[in-house]
Structure formats: structure tokens, C-alpha cells
Length: 162
Length: 393
Image 1 (spheres, rainbow over the protein chains, first blue to last red):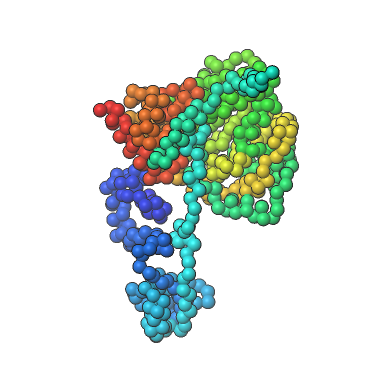
Image 2 (cartoon, rainbow over the protein chains, first blue to last red):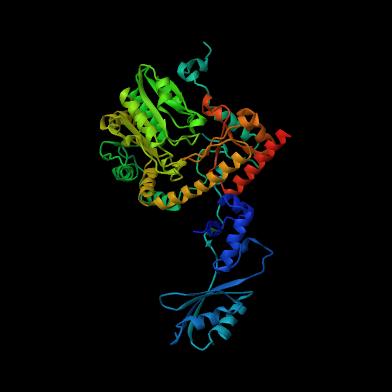
């Protein structure tokens, strides 16, 4: 695997200069790898993983997981409808899944009303959408590989040991 | 008569020097609260993989809180036998050639106490883990250090063994990959050591605790050479590869007569290793390979990073083939290892361990453990570089 991609996946918050040191490359090489990954549409952007429940100043946000059943089409199956749904700014994530429904859509909004409004007025009224089931998110325990509210026990490690 | 407690301490214990690492630990402990980056540890920075910890929780839930057989749970010995056969290529039947111990440290102590008559000699290569010499003396043996050198990347050579050998030597103690040097031996070098052991009729105690952390090429156990399994005690454990230092769980494999002798000492002193740790160890051996591979990959990259940085800043350092220790030289920058370690801690809040804590052969070197995250490793290297630059200005 591309060494820079590998470091990105580990989510270690390394600067370009640090990545260069860790991967044993020059900074220019790392930049070039990053550019190539962007060009190949593998690397789409940066997002920090945050526990916003700890940040008082964070804008209140409501998240919901929505199970969406849709009608597949003759040409393209689920793609056209899925892309249409994905284009809404309210939609954070949209995936095609197997099982009892077709799309799992993660929607974010400033309030419960906004999210509910989006589902009832926009999402469920799209032609081809058969049904929706909305699950409001209550609490994260783990997000993208990071444990939330985790106590760090490494402090008890001895500073010097044989 | 007024009591004089110190008069009751056995003379061979009283005469043992305190570990050099202890002094340095006190020094670092005094700086509590300051932002010290420690490269002075001797353990992984990873917590034990969750599936292993979860197995221990399950063990407690099931109420598995009793003694196990002296040799250890048969289930664990079977897994150990399978693991050692698969990864090291030596077959040890689980019923009489494997004993589970409280870390390799206990296994080592058992071996010395079970095999040494007073005055028997033990050869060990040095610089080395801090407890080899004291453990030999505590078992009333005579320790014969065999030097390893930076010019050989701290590999143990047959020539050094020949030069150090004395009549009455019974045991040869090996630790490859080596703490603190990261030194290993090539197949050819190991073959020569095996020849030496056969020729001098030595029993070999081989502490291979860092074997899974071999980065370049395959690890080879001395027990795989012709006739060597009959004269080798293979010592291994879970602390380093599976990040299980605090669990205190290890094992020894070897000829049945020798394991039986070690078992005698074990049953009267330790009885058995903790059953919870044994249950966790079963899970580690059954399902831990991916976690070990992941950690090895991390250490590998960190090794490349620190070795490159050390050499760039004038701290000559060979690339350790195994372990998570680098053992650079401070000779090139005109300092002693003690001045370097104390000065660096004082000026830049980075802790490394002076090489002499691992025996006189560590003179002119320090041990830096790279089982630390990239952020801290890079910052520690930057601070070291600044410290050296200031010394030189």
C-alpha cells in the first residue's frame, strides 16, 4: 500500500513533515503522494474525529440514521436515486446495504425538527423512495476507530523500566 | 541485645549491587509533573489487545479463580506447544516438556536454581538485561560475562565465547534479540555458538522473548540446530509480542528431565501462574497473530525513524534487527553515557537509560526504547538534536 495512505488511515494526526520522517521519505515525496491520492480520487479530504459532547461551544447537532427502501431502476439499479439523495447538504453519509432496506443514510441537522422536516418533506417524497425509518442518534461510544470517554491508563506506565 | 536488622541479610544478597536502572528511575521520578518524554521504558506502549483482555474478563465471570496444575493449564501448554512448533520449528510435547511460569523472569530463576550447584559457571553475553548476573549469583553460580561489540552490531561471536570460557562452565545464557542492544546473530553465527555449546557440553538457556519483534529476516532459535533441543531450555513469554507485561506470564520448554527439575522448584515456590493470565494467554496464542503483526509493523517503522535520526545527529547506531531498543553510541559527540543521559534529562526532559545500567559493556552507549508514538519519538529526537547542538556550540 502507498506509505502515505497507510499513515493517513492510521489517523495519527501527523504533519507532512512528520509523515516524511516516519515513512522515510522527503517532504516533497509525501506532498506528491498526497497530490496523487487526490488526483486518483482516493483521498477526498480531511476531517477530524471529535467528541463534540465535550465541547460546550460546539453547535448543537442532531444526527439520525435513516433506513431507506427504494425502487431499483432498469438502468443503473440504485445508483441514480442514491446519488440524488446524497447530494442534499443534510446528508452526511449515504450507503447501499444488504438486508431489510436498501440505503442507510446519515442525516445531520441543527435540531430534531430540522432533521424530521428533511425526512418527511424531502427524502420520503422523492419518487422511488418506498419507505423510511428514522433512528435518532443518542450517544457515541466509538467513532471511526476512536473510543470516546476513554480513560487513558498509559499514565500508570513506569517512566523507566528494565 | 539490640537488633541489627542488616546483619540478617544474607551476604550474597547484601553484596548484590542495586540495579543501575533504579538510580536513573529515581532521577526521572523527581521530575514528575514536567513534560518528560521517556524512552526509558522496557515495555510496549500498546495496551494488551482487547480480545485478550476480554478473555480474562470472561474467565473471571466464569469464576475461574483457582490454582492450576503446577505445569500450567493443559490447554495453554497445548497452545504453546503448537505455537512453538509452528513459529520456531521445535516440537515440545505439552504433557512433560512445557512449563508455564510467572514471566520469563521466573522461568530463568527456576532454571538457575534447578541446574546450578554452588560455584557452577554461567556464561552470558553483555550488555544484557539487568537481572541475568544477579539471578546467577542468587543461585550461587558464578557469572562469566562475554562481551559483545558495537562493531559486530552486538552479535555474540564464537570467538568471544572461546576467549571467555573457563573450566567448570555449565550454562550458556542467550538473549537474542537482545535487550538493550537489539543485537541478534545470523544463522552462521548461531551455528558456531551451537558447535561451541556441544563441544563444551553446555546447557543453553535461550531467552527469546523479543523473537516476534524481528524486523529483517526470520528469527532462528538455537534449539533448531542439530542436537541442540536436547541441551536447550527455550524461554519465552507474552510480555513483549502480545503487550502483556503486567500479566506476568511466560513459559519454558526443554528436555522432560530438566522441565521436571524446574517444576520442582516452581511447585514449592510459586505453585502456578495466575489462572486469569493463563486463560488470557490461551486467547493470545489462538487469535493474537494479527495484533502481533500490527504492533511489529509499527515498531519496525519507528525503528527506521529513530535509527536514521540518531545517525544523522552523530549518535552512531546500528539498526537493531529485533526488539524495540536502539543502542546508540555517544562517543562521537565526546560525552560519557552518564553525562549524556543526565544532561539530556535535565536540559531537554528526555529520558534514556545509560548503557552501563546493562553492564560495563554498555559504556559509551545509551538505550532508547522506541515503543512510543510517532509524535513523542519525533519530539524526543528533535530535543536530542538541540541538546547535542548546544553542547557543540
